[in-house]
Length: 314
Image (cartoon, rainbow, N blue to C red):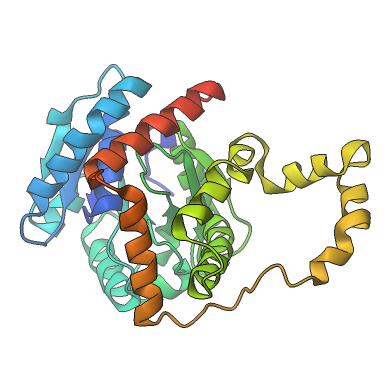
């Protein structure tokens, strides 16, 4: 589109919504040397944003900052129109409420130059459902990150029915330029790819807790000390490919295919009763012990960095 800067020419990014995801995006973009303009109407949003960025900065410094990285390049703008008036790219990270996102994207669209790409951090809504009120829906796209966005590399990019192919290509190229690992999806799927896989594991975990078959700690340990150690290296399908030995996936499917009919999983979500909720919440509290949220975040960040370094991805 005429007037759109190239993906490698982006200098200023507007982060609309500064909760955990939006603030994480802000920290990441600052660490990569961009100017960041942030907008969020919630009372106290600026203070929470700066706190999260400060908390994330040691981890980002450990990973390696861009030469031009500077937290002073953050501007908090209380007026949405001004926040979007002079920017090269917008990342929206509002709460997961379809009506809210439809309205907010339309408001962003109305005050932003028509060539600027508007990306949404939605965890599951198709862009086709969110872009319905935009005057320029062709420049709206999903850029789905993972928490925390300042550490987890993956971004899933997919457009809606009214999104132009140029926008999807531009967004994918920009995220790669910004240092992300990008999946450009061929078509919309509610929840995208990774969240659908996460959801299957999450639902089965809830079933086991609900039935008293396993504790929260046992479920977490089964992944951290089990298959989770393999997944950062080769993913679940290549892991199963190796389970077939020299015969690979073909032998694995021939040999273990009948087990697909075994009652090893229950993909229907259980009723989230008060008892189930309390069991999960209490289990997490028991597993966390005396560690605060900040301490758990620092522990997680250090672990992710160690894995990334061990895998040569830094």
